[in-house]
Amino acid sequence: MNMEKLFVNKTIEINAPASTVWNALTEREYTDQWAIEFTDGAEFHIESDWNPGSAVLWTGQDGSVVVQGNVTALEPQKFLRFTVFDVRGEKPPITDEDGIT
Image (cartoon, rainbow, N blue to C red; front, side, top):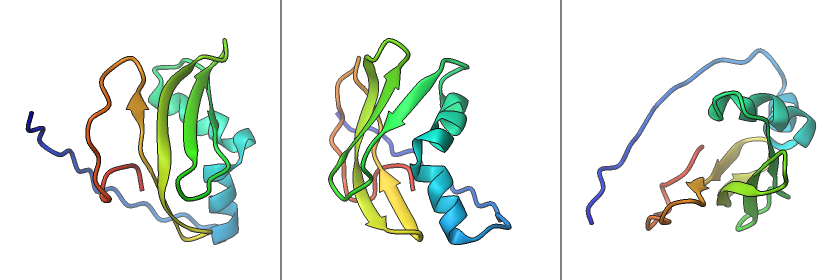
């Protein structure tokens, strides 16, 4: 099966130190706030230790994993990429360029 790749290039400027932005992307108290933007209003928690190769789990209020992925690239406070897959479907093959960056 040959799936066409989806690529979205969106850039925003944030007037804050890199450490503040990094914390917003990786600390649970903040990930809970932005994860909801991807879930049609359902509350989810993103759980990860944010190390290369580590799991990234999106869990619902009942504790069930709905979306999972892995950290595929990391440079603390500069660069983070992780994959996301709906666990209810078939996991597609991935390359080094896949994921949310």
